[in-house]
Image 1 (cartoon, rainbow, N blue to C red):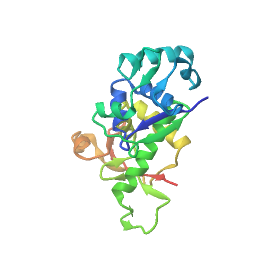
Image 2: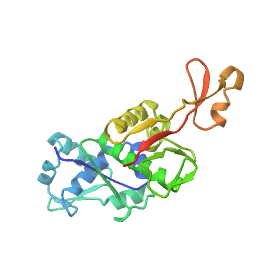
Image 3: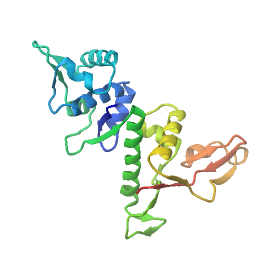
Length: 229
């Protein structure tokens, strides 16, 4: 099976906007096709060798034309719109030097790979080599995935990938942990702030990374540790 391909920006803004418009799968088809050929001019048979079924190719080509991402010339050549122009239409600058490229066997793997790189990049960018309050003179094997509001949680994962439900965040977080990186829960357990009857439900809004347990306890999430090497 041919690898699927995703071109996106380092902060995954394009990815989130395409998902919101329900065009992400179509965009991945376009990126995969472009990766198979150095130019943007295709004939119909060129799409038969990029790992999609013939019925899917027919569907995607029709959708590309409907969305203005593909044009057919008089001599039956198909021209695919540049990924840079697609990104620009969403207000995202993505030239060749800023483009991030990911490969995977499925859309799920593409998104998980992109988000895992995003997580690691933000850990080091925001912490600036600070680990546990001490300046590190080396690249740490484990880095805190919790600083300045960045927490490797289901909700954080959902927001990074542009999903609406927590279930999707859970699935991708689990997939990342099993396939792409090592995530360890920090000890001691999450900090107990009190029962909701005593401290009030407003705590969940006023303090970051808090959650309500089934028994009415309010806890503040401790940071996870994510292996970055």
